[in-house]
Length: 186
Image (cartoon, rainbow, N blue to C red; front, side, top):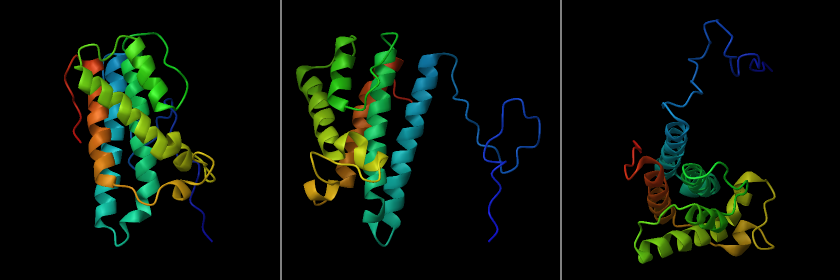
C-alpha cells in the first residue's frame, strides 16, 4: 500500500516552498477581528449549503444527515460567538445554543429585534440544540442525546427546514456584527 505523504498536509507561514497541492489559505479576509469572524461564519454558511446540495444529489440523501446536522449546529454556534464577541471581550466556551443565545442577548445583541423574532431566535436555538444534542452526535462517534443515540430520539430530519432556519439564524447573528448587512455568498 502506498500511503499519502503527511509532510505536505499544511505549510508553515515561514515555508517559502511552492506549497504543493494548491495551498488553501487559512487566513480569513478582513481588516478587523469582527471582519475575520464574519468570514469564518461565511465559510460555515458555504459548508452547510454544500453539504445540503451534495446530499440532495446522492442516491441516499441520508448519507450526510449527521454531518449536515453538526454543521448547522456549528454554524449557529460560531455565528452566536461572533455576535457576542462584537460586544464583549470573551464568549462562553460552550456548545449549548440556548445559553449562547442568552449570553448574546445579555451582551446587548438583538436589542433591535421585535419580540416575535427575539422569541424565534431563542426557540430555534433551543430546538436545534435539542435535535442536534448540542452537536454531540456529530462531534463524537458515540454521542448521546438525552440519554440515547440520535436515532433513538429522532426518526428523520427535515434537512431543508434545518438548512433554511440555520441560515436565517446565522444571518441574524452576523447582522449584529456587520451593523445589519449580511455578507454571505452562500
